[in-house]
Structures are given as C-alpha cells and as structure tokens.
Length: 314
Ligand code: ATP
Image (cartoon, rainbow, N blue to C red; front, side, top):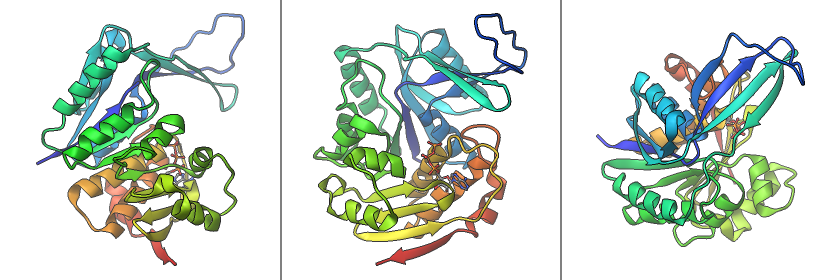
C-alpha cells in the first residue's frame, strides 16, 4: 500500500514550561517540563498515524534537536525520511503561567541557502515512490525561496500525486499563481482575507471571492475551516456548507492540522467527496477534545462523524 508524505520544512521541539507565576528578571525553576516533536506537518503525521493511514514524515532536520525529533517519531512508530543539514533545528518554548497566560519564545530555526533548496528538491523527488498524497504544512525556514512549495507542487503533479497545501502568506499566494495548482488548500477565513488583501464579511462574500478570483481557479478542493462553525468547501464548481455539533473543547490548537490529516487520509483512500469533507471535520473536532496538540482518539471517530451535517449550496 502507498503512504502519505507529510512535509514540515521547519520542525521544532516544542517545550512547555508550566509556572505558577513568571518572574521577570529573575530565576524561574520548572519541574513539569514536556518536550514534543512539533511543527504543523508533524501534527498531520501524528493524526494520520492515529487514523491508521500509512504516513512518512519528511522535511529538513539537523543537530541534536533533529535527532530528538527522530527519536520521538521512532518511539511512536511513525516513519520518517528527513533531509539532514549541518545546523540545529529549532526549539519553540511555551511558558504557561499566571492563570492560563501563555508566553511563547519561538526560535527562527536554521538559515538555509540555494544549495540546501536544490538538495531538498532532489530529496523530495526521491521520496515520491509509493506516495499517494503529499501534505505540505507551515512556513519556510529563512533563506529558502517563496517558490519552494510551487516547485514541490510541480514535481508531485508531474507524477500525478495530489498535494494538500496548508500554508499562508507569500508561499501560499505564489503557489496559487503557479502553472500547477495544489489539489487542496485549507486556509481559515483570516488566511483567505490576507491572501486577497481585503476583509471578508460573510460567507456569501467568501463564496463570491472563491468563484471570481483567478488565484483559486484550478484548485480542486478549497476547504475554508471556520472553527466551531465547521467549514465552507468549494469542490470544483460546487459549494458545500458543513456544520458540526457543539463540543466541549479542551485544546483547539492543531485542529487545522488534524483537519488536513483527515482530508488527506480520505483522499488517499479514494473515498467519495462527502466522506472526504466529513472525515476532515471529524478529525478537526476530535483534536479539540484532547489535551495534546495534533492528537485524536480514533475510537470516537464514528460517533462524531455521524453528527456532521452537510448542505450543498447554490
Ligand atoms: P489551527 O491553526 O489551530 O490548527 P485553523 O484555524 O487552521 O486551526 P480551525 O478552523 O480552527 O482551523 O479548525 C479546523 C476544524 O477543527 C474546524 O473546521 C472544526 O471541524 C474543528 N474545530 C476547531 N475548533 C472547534 C471548536 N471550537 N469546536 C468544534 N470543532 C472545532
């Protein structure tokens, strides 16, 4: 069977430091440290693994932080195939303090160059044997061109492998201007507004933008996730509105990544259109019910899948 290739170009070790109070200009000692393999594509890979969808995590890794990420993936039996570099991957620190406040310190990560980019594209092309779907998530490390995702989409498209792209800003815009389009994009409302550089007030306006703006032409699936409100989906020329039940949210971070995992797994399995959309909504919802980011309880899948309603719009 084929696998899904889940790409993260700038992965991290996510460190969580829970503190009663954060003392500035002083020493803070922390006992309950957690360190996990982080980065949007790694969330996607983890959820795919929980869905029992064969997955290989890929991207760029380096140094002892890179080794730590690989060790974490090995421990959870997630296959990986990263391109090694001679620099350290990054740490991202979240300090949870003073009654639910969260202070984050995010390293930029390695500084790469044209040679790294050329090497990665070869590495990527060589990773595509027996791949059903490619997912690309998140931002690019410094030094790589904004065209990198466009080039990856082109390489995959020539081999007729669909690409699910979950990015924002310049890399997303450039990818939508290329000759080969991503098969699926999953922006949220805010990312769409940023993309077209004007605010969107309601779903009618959103539908209009997705129909008229040439950026979206030729993108088979556009899934606009709306948090607790579900999603608006454009599939070829048709629009759908998905609504989801009210649930007790524990931690919504990574829901977008979990949605990407659900969508990709259904596409890879060749299910029908309704199942693609409902699977993406279900995995997004299930993620919000767990403490851990990019994590679902697959045993609840069918129960919540049944609760999603879908309406075709005119
Ligand atoms: P993130 O950046 O945190 O990964 P996102 O903005 O890309 O998230 P959202 O639209 O917040 O993505 O969430 C994706 C999907 O997860 C939603 O379409 C929905 O199915 C589910 N979801 C998210 N938040 C909630 C919520 N509060 N209640 C129920 N379901 C939710």
